[in-house]
Image (cartoon, rainbow, N blue to C red; front, side, top):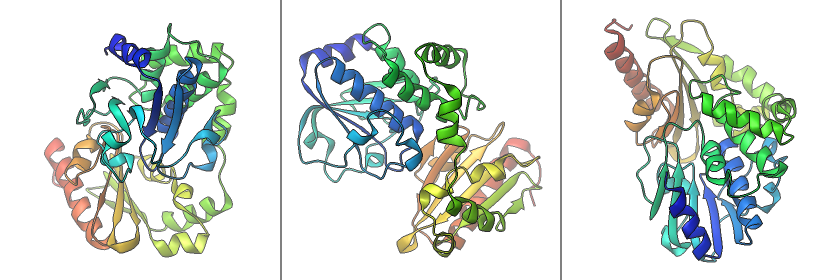
Length: 324
C-alpha cells in the first residue's frame, strides 16, 4: 500500500467525506469512524456518511452519532471504505460530485479500483486492519479509535473464528487491547444481544431449512410476511445464516430474503473449500471466499431455484461427485 501517497493527499487537502456501503456491518462502520476520528485529530474537516440505517448494536461505537446520510456538500476528498464497487455506496450522483479526489480503501479481491488512489489489500482480514496500518505511527490511536478498529476486525473475522484471521490481525487486536479495549464488552454488544423480534424471526426461519447436494448445501428463506409476523426488520435477521452453515456436513449455506418489487437478496457462507464470492459474482454480487452476497430481480421461489442450481454445480465441479 502506498501509505506515503495517502498522507501526501491528507496533507494537501482540508475536507474529507468518509463513506461506506449500504447495509453497513461492523467493519464498515468501525473503519469509517476510526478514520473519521483520526482525520479530526489531524485538524481536518471529516464527515462520516453511510446511506443506510446504522444497526442498533453498533451505536455504542464512539462517533456513531456523527454519521449522516447523503449530503449535497462537496469535499476535497471522498474516501470510500469496504466497497468493491461504486454502486454499493448508495449515492444518487457520480462520486466526483461529492469529492474532487476519490480514495478507495478495501480488502475485497473483487474490487474494481475505482479511485484516484486505490489502497486495496485482499490479504487483510478487514478494512479495520488496513486503517490500523495507515494510522500506526502517524496518528495517536486513542481508546475511541482503538475500539472502532477492534470492532471492525473482530466482526469481519467472526470473533477470530474465520479463515481470514491471520497472525497480523491477531497482533493488531492485542495492541488494541493494550489501549484499553475490552473484548468481552465488544462481544456482548455485537454478538450476545438479541431482540425478542429476532428470536421470533429465527424460530420461523429455521422451519424453512432445506438440504440439497447430499447435505452439502443448507438453505433458509425469509419472507416479508415472516418479518411482519415477528415485528422484525432486516437487522433482526443478522447472523441467522450461520445456523445453516454450522450444521455438520454442510459446505455452503444460503439465505434468501424477499423484498419489495420482486427483488430477492441472497447471502452465501461456506466452510472449507467453495469460494462463494465466485458464486455471488455470477449474479453481479461479490464478497469474500467464505462470505458473499448478491441481489436478484426475481421473486423468491425463482431465485431459490436458479441460485441453488448454481451452488450445486459449484460443488459438483469441485468434488466431482453427483449431487442429488
